[in-house]
Image (cartoon, rainbow, N blue to C red):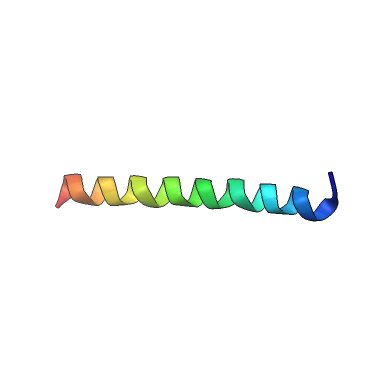
Length: 33
């Protein structure tokens, strides 16, 4: 596996984590408001 492919996979994981966090924040806001 080349360094470029590895970086893309890591970036993909990061994006997934950010998306999950954003969704959780929206759910919390929805529950409170």
